[in-house]
Amino acid sequence: MNGIKEVSLKIFENENIKGNLSYFEVDKHIHFCIKRVYYIYNNNKNSTRGYHAHKKLHQAIWCPYGEIEIVFDNGYNKEKFVLDRPDKILIVTKGYWREMIWKKDNSVLCVAASDVYDENDYIRDYEEFKTYIKDGFWDYEN
Ligand code: T46
Image (cartoon, rainbow, N blue to C red; front, top):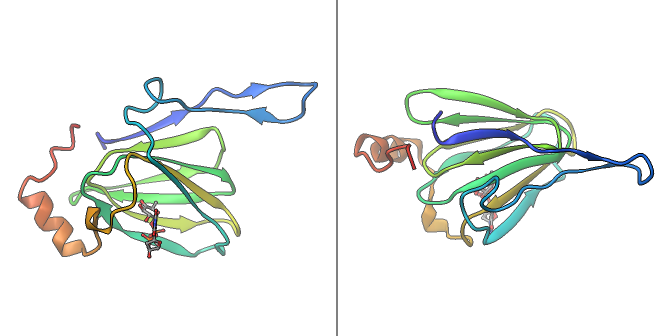
């Protein structure tokens, strides 16, 4: 899908200081400024969330712990992504319906978003989503 990019971040390993470090940066990895960060936690395996699309919001989505599957839908096709490494991020533009499925207990889903929270930016009805697509609301190129 044109508007969804999976990026493997660089991993900085250090034998003296235990553990790894990864980062992503505006302009280098993502094309929008971050105005909000949120995260979803305390989920059991097989729990699901989402079922909406965003009219304008752009997001970077990653899972620092555990495993979460995200199915994106552009109204014609669906594509599944698995977030199972802290160094993997998805960069997602506006206009994709999504379902998130927790594959392991207590997996954490983090989102860095291009704007503050606005319920008017959500399309939470699938038929309405299809109408937006039919009316050419998104070109899926931007
Ligand atoms: C998304 C996926 C990946 C706020 O008040 N402020 C916020 O910044 C957010 C994100 C949510 N909320 C409220 C709105 C709802 O009453 O928190 C409640 C749960 O939100 P929602 O049902 O939209 O949660 P998810 O997990 O279905 O979706 C969330 C994000 O809302 C959405 O932007 O792309 O995570």
